[in-house]
Length: 286
Length: 253
Image (tube, rainbow over all chains, first blue to last red; front, side, top):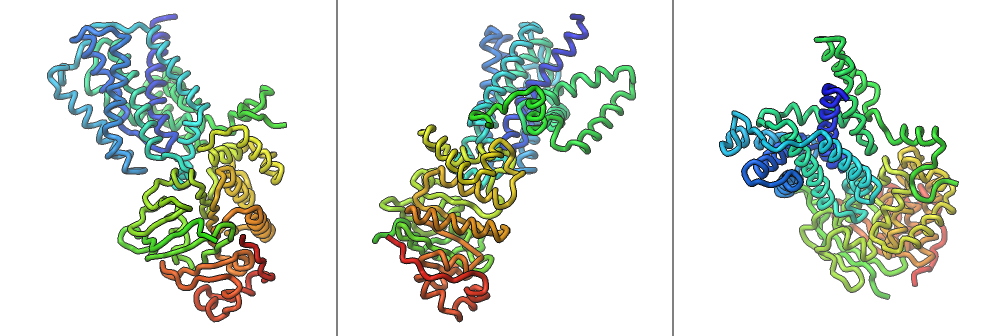
């Protein structure tokens, strides 16, 4: 594998991790527009632990995930009181605040950025990404994801069905943030350098964009969205400067034709039938 | 005969506007109680208040020996209070089966849940055939059947139905009312909110009429059915105009 190919795959991995961080709360209908902030928490926490405290990667990166998840749990109380566009704005603002704090935090280099001495190999990035994908796919087969989907469908009905709506939403938000934190920690150690400006609004918005493009109905949507977003710009390289224009036009076209995203549950069932599989649900059709 | 559910002085306000003002309701075990009233009278709020899905300012909800006034909805559900909400009650992006399973999510006896769901499919073959399709693709009547089925697998002791016949074809309206009577005959206590006054009075044992958040009239149905002036005043029409009055069944245990 050439260095270029590895480089593209690495970017793809970080995009996939970010995608699932956004996806989990989105299953319950919560749009987290501040995902870059949670990545920053994970990145700076893990980098500080390996640089200054002598921790190993194996403990520092999960610690970064825990820190991001912990912060999500703390802010969940005020933030998840808001819904819809207000929740999006609140998370957006939170992402900005986090980024601004790191921009001014001297102990991790402030605006000059923070070099990270321990290195995470491409293999480490690939393995962790695979583990996260497996985790979220596994989670999608559980009642937890079913409950989240019920909340997204109708909060009131979910409440009447006796679901602990608040607790489930906090759990989804926190888990998503923890995944973002793990992704951030790996990012810091793979590229050996982080700066607050990287964890920008643009990163948060792009991530949401490709999750929506992939579709949120099934667990495969974010994966396809991340693939599309990571690979298509590379394939369009021949178009040089125009590639961004073509890419943007493609996104607009996709959103117009398939607002529900590229991967839908109906489409997946169709593919399943094509290969002669029975529906995955227990007690398959007669 | 003792009340299985008794609501007293329930008061609910939405942002300063009082939707329910000191409403009391007593439901005897094994009966059908219908709650009638014009749009905005507070019928839906009463049911949501009984479930604890809207915060009550005042009032008491007593279910058998338990005071549930401060209980969360899932606690009330676990006790046996189950509400089939108004309008699009099913979770449209989930399949029929997922909707039904959600109704039973507090139960641990999975085998029994499976066989109860199988019984629902037997009773409504259309649902069985489409168990793995999104509930959105069902007709309004079929969705209502899913919503009622979902409530039944929660093993209700008091089943509350919020306008179950709303927007359904005449065929499904009859099916829904048949089902209500059938469930009641097997011993289930039912609270029925309806716009279809005639139909509701014909199946219920007692009725409560709400007006602007207060109880206007309450009493046994046979008395109310014959009180034309009252029905016209509160419900804008006589009972006979919209239903087929049948002799009162003396069925309360």
